[in-house]
Amino acid sequence: MEGLGIHLSSLIAQVFNFGLLLLLLYMFAYKPVIKMLDQRAAKIKESVDQTEQIKQQAELAEKETARIIAEASKEGQKIIEQATQIGEETKQKAKQDAKLEAERIIAKAKLEIERERDDAIGELRNAFADLTVMAAGKVINRSLDKEQHRQLIDKVLEESNVLSKN
Image 1 (cartoon, rainbow, N blue to C red):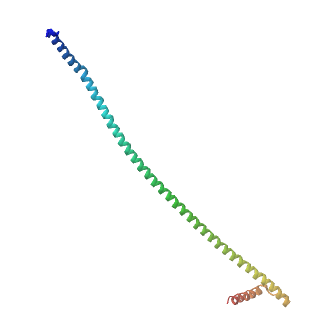
Image 2 (cartoon, rainbow, N blue to C red):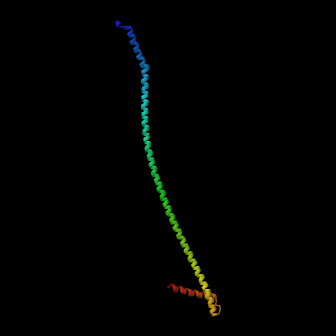
């Protein structure tokens, strides 16, 4: 092999050096690079897993938000219905109160009118009795006892009321 320019001792030294270099590279370069690549692959896998978890949590949160919004909408509708019902009840109560107040005022007015009518009739009777006594006094030419004439006139008026009612 010497004819080819290859010396056995130099070839063995080169093969030994190459083997030693491979061993050193394997120990100091290959293992750390593989370890670093494995760590990086693990981080990437962990990031992908976290991304998937975050995506699932976001979907759950979206569903929960939709449920809460629907629930709030139902509750809001319920509150609106209650407010409408309360408003209607208040309106009906106000109408009823106004009607009762009007009936009370009308009843009071009727009583007042009846009382005033009775007072007017009493005054009219008294005035009529006084006029009758005066007229009778002039006709008889003497003054009669006012109380006796008043009783007589009241009796006549009561009899006339009984006759007019029949």
